[in-house]
View 1: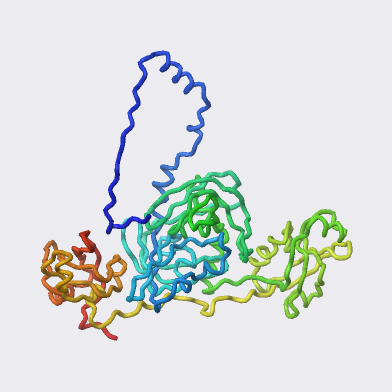
View 2: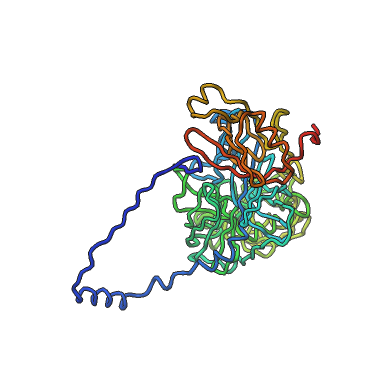
Length: 495
């Protein structure tokens, strides 16, 4: 079930008032049980101050993309490559029909007072236009400073100052069982708060071994993507990114990107426009108990080399198949999952010592770390300019026509402007083909719309920056839709 301003659900409220027993013995018994029972409720955290203080750093993100019509199979996107139980939870883009404009919504949070914002790559990937909505309801255009597919981190920038800024936690202080809280916009419901506990740390997901995910049981749903995960101190400890689901919705297992990983990525995105990761050029596998016994290793640990890139750093220093890497750069390798993460954070060109088990002996072998190939063709991906609406669109991005006789009859209207296509601010306001504009409100004055030409003349006469409200009828539902005119007069526009 989905709710929007275009539906009018009816709710039935019932009050249940059980009769209170007049017997004083019952009241005394209940009071006694309440006093003698451990006061578990008082041990639960109070999230109210945390939410009041940290909610302003969370933003809602709308990404608009124009593309040719596609079949349902083509619209699966990146999720088609993921296992059927693992989903990134940006909502499916809502197709806007022949206008070929799709919208996706997600969340993010402010990391600097001058407008830098962190979110997920899959929220803004491929977007022609990105709009950020702040907690004070300001809407600002955002550009992509950089993005990293492997960590699913994107850094945005809006032109603003004096913004509230998130505080960051220390991952070493986060423990399994700690309370955590998420704020985001699931299904478009802004500033939604959900809470739970840390279920595990350092989780590896299929084909995503570079990120040691935080696993929680916090309720996460489409639209939470890119939103922050807070600890009880109000510090951001993660970015909500994926869920485990066989149904497409929340099933009790959510995954968040650790904040230390995210901050390292954003720093590199600012500096280089991409993320530089280390590599040594080996394929590895876990060391089981049987493998450890057969190799003469005292316990099952480390990463067993099963293949070597002939041109990589490992081949150049003479590593061999069957070598077991026990430590890298002074950090122990407990299992094979940890090695890519440890190597990945080392800057390419750095000389590092490895501890390698070979033929029953441990030896130290130095290696100069290589660079992991980038999956970004453009080192500084920036959202392109949104496509221009057709020439017959007005400054709100609407292409309109007069009402047909059938529309007048079905909608019981004598006049108005019927929407044929919707772009820009009008598309973001969810106006679509078939809607009928019956009135325009601006500067405190209401104008009844007589025709499409009348409507366009009123819109095009407004000054840039004007607040505009349209009275719109969709079927038998009437709604007032507010927006702000940002486009310059058509006579000044260049194509």
